[in-house]
Amino acid sequence: MTNIEIIESFFTAFGNRNHQAMNALYSDDIVYSDPLFGMLEGQQVMDKWEMICRDIRDFRLTVIKSEEIDHEYATCQWKATWYSSRSKKQIVFDAKSFMRFGGGKIIEHSDGFSLTKWIAQAYGLRGQFFGWLNFMKRKVQREYRGRLERFSVSKPLFATGDKRTYLSDSFDQ
Image (cartoon, rainbow, N blue to C red; front, side, top):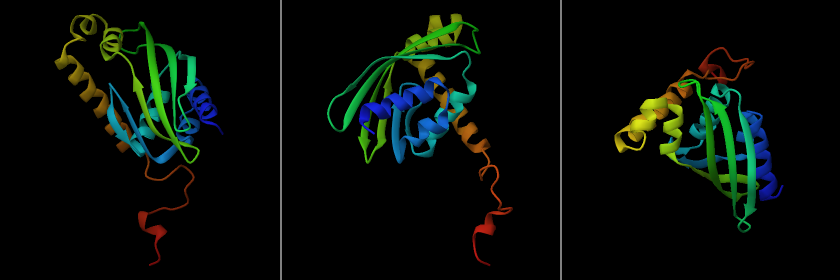
């Protein structure tokens, strides 16, 4: 697959809220960053997308423009809309993704967007009044990082259908 095909596959899967297909395009040691979650690595990145895909409702994603910069880097400008579970209002999310590729996988991914604008939409009046302040941004970042940590910890240790009963079942005794 070319880098543009990988991006198209990633955003098609995201539009369908298919975190398994999205995560399959990442390398195991993926590095990700955005203004809300900060820097994430490996399984944290994959858990982030699983959590988002499970939580988001009435989601619509439109790719505006994908562009290969060179053999290693590409960008994608995109727009998403959904309804906030907090404010019950529609959120319009404009973002640009930057991706680096290696070995047919995404090895680095960063999303750029206005955290202030997102907070103003997601937190209603409180977000509109205080979303531009650094203390509110840090509070929201801590909240979402905590949500991701709780989500990651709550996942079963083994995939459903795994035949092992105990952790030690995988070792000779």
